Amino acid sequence: AVAAPGTDVAAALESLLDASLANSSMAGGAEPRFTTLETIRAYAASELDGDDPGQEVRRRQLAWCIALAEDDNPRFWERGTPWLDRVEPELANVGAALDFARQQGDVEGELRLAASMRHFWRVRGHGAEARRRLEEAYERCADVQPELRARVIYETAIMRMFVGDYDSARDMWLASLE
Image (cartoon, rainbow, N blue to C red):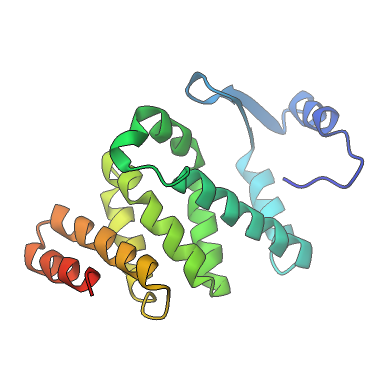
């Protein structure tokens, strides 16, 4: 969330918690996580739609999700459980960021986030989500930087392989080398 300059964020959050409009939990024993009731979240989202400051909030959310998913671009085997546990509670934010990027025509943002999420989606049992998001991203990767295009093709090929579409996966892997 974004607060007006000079707002005491801790006091505002405490007020929401006291009024039972927000909840607090420890995500995986890490940092505290604050969530709102679904009706409050839906209302806030509708207030952001079409609003110039709302667009800026969504752009920041997209950038934050990309940074979380890329996590300094570690190799997937180095990410391990702590990275997976950090991403898990953010799935709704990742989905909203991907949708926003697509709606705004931010092809690079969508491709970077979708490609970076592939490992999480596959390992945590979201294979259908991974395949759908990566296939959608693949459709738009023709005019992006060659490295990003190759990465999206590679990640999409992995998901095709995991559903048994071996010929298509092999063709994509070969295409990613071009």
